Image (cartoon, rainbow, N blue to C red; front, side, top):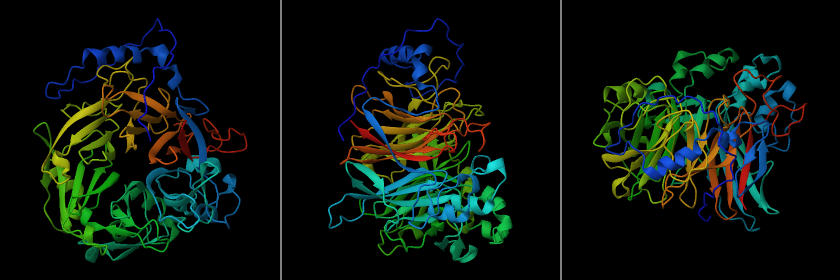
Length: 544
């Protein structure tokens, strides 16, 4: 895919009234606190209130210049040929088992071996974190049996036909992982907490690995265990709770593979996970804690074993602020550290980031990006966390492209927020869009950083969407929008197919503003029909 140019947009004249700025805490970046004059000029244009109207959340979505949008899969679409018709007013576990679920975050896009018929194919893996009763069920009355099946993970076969990507109903790899899925546990803690468990819960994201599997990041399973406790499946057993909150590994190309929870990576509520490898082939896994002041961790495997055990032994580290970046501090070994990873990280002095989420790494392995959704409660800013509620993006340098290096120099690449009303926002020169609460990150084939935002349904200030930030060249740091989601919707990540010039994106929970319900959503996108609920949708953005 050729690099995209952030072309200037025709914007309306300036408004006479500008809201009073909200003061942001100063950010000291080793002499980089002040923006350059050219960046300041770009900010003054970007921050013009009247020029931001194109970002307002609406009933429908909006595609950025140079893209066309297609729908690939929606909540309720058939995954298996025996799926019942979608009946949103009377959801059943049978529907949830065999239809695309309510919520979706792109976890991985995997290329299967080429088929003899020459038809291009892909396998899409999505995490399905939520199933809110107020948006799923008529009258808002919860149905835990259905909700447990709606959450989890979805694997979908895609094929390229007639110039576009489409789903394959009943595809070979197509399946759901949910509360009823049998999982194994491996690694140092398995002997104490149990070798098997039913279900993956609260999966917030995932990552394809260089060795062919997919890693899934289980978040805080506590609310799900409470919600499912009455189903009689053991979720009310305190001993079972210890079997959730792990990194889960599975083979997306083998529909019979059993997911394995890797206890060597510790138990913690995770927001994002990223897999890479050392030059000698040892797995390296970065992951973030899903918390307002969450930490960043790294696991380096002890071996490059190809028998499926490489993630069962290794070294866990937490990122600690220091020396113009972060130092990786090794955590003590043993089950107590693994079972109480959050406490171990705090004891070691782990840096508290402002709601850390998604991670992305450049193709050459020299740069790691971290999305932080913001933390208005932060009382003291530091070099990598400015505070405030709009969020920011941190850029780490990996010396010599060594993911195991002890020190990563770092800086802030972007400070989110509305330049018209907030001081301290940071966007590159030539930026044509602004954003709030970055949550997911991905690098496209041209090396640009794609940023997915998530305001948790509160899109009163601006639409959530997918934004592109240039990472090199004279326009480094410049931001443009590729896609703006409808009101109440968030962007659940991006993945790329260079051959078809297609970017896959997830449009999460449209219409789910804070006061919305199944009967009264803020929009009924994508159909906009009065008899249809809003539907989470996997879209394709095709470069024109």
